[in-house]
Image (cartoon, rainbow, N blue to C red):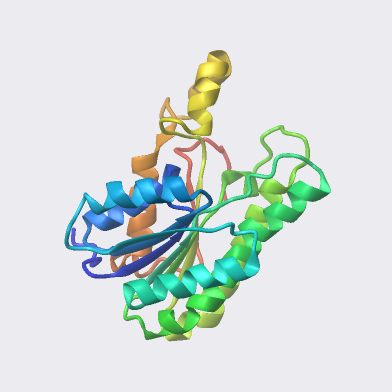
Length: 255
């Protein structure tokens, strides 16, 4: 299947590692130009070098950004648009991963998970209006619809708010051809990720989680990337204002 991504310009908030990195690499392999940000300059520089080696026919731009900072976030989107010559696809993958029920964690989660997305959409909007295949993807979490037994924290709450905002983007800007969707992963394993750490630190708990997933294992970064890239691509044109649960059936519920 031709996803129609050749020459498309993709901006990813949070793309130096994890699901964002797998997604960026797949876009590059499909012939898209990619701009991404992450917090650490060293990690960004290394990722740019490695991803640039995947294809010499596309442009890869990386920049170190603290997405909790409003103007830094807006500056990155403006720079990305300049570097790529436009924006066709915007993906908000970054998270504050707020797991503590305190003021600091709530504030950072709100700034990174919600406001960074709001600011990025705002800055990218005019470029998206000019695109022939504009798409916005928010990376959510199944914690936005299911209680996993943890104490109260901002993580699930801000991911739920992200779903509501994505719907508003889709409903308001659909007349310009702009689509907005949320892809919510369940438990995903990749080297160096949080589930890799849990597997090493608490193998019994990891095995219990695996057993609770109908497919008998956790998802992978590559599998999530394929879902994200398809949904963002012109091939996924009729997916709009939608929440896609990408959890392998981990959450036994009907949305």
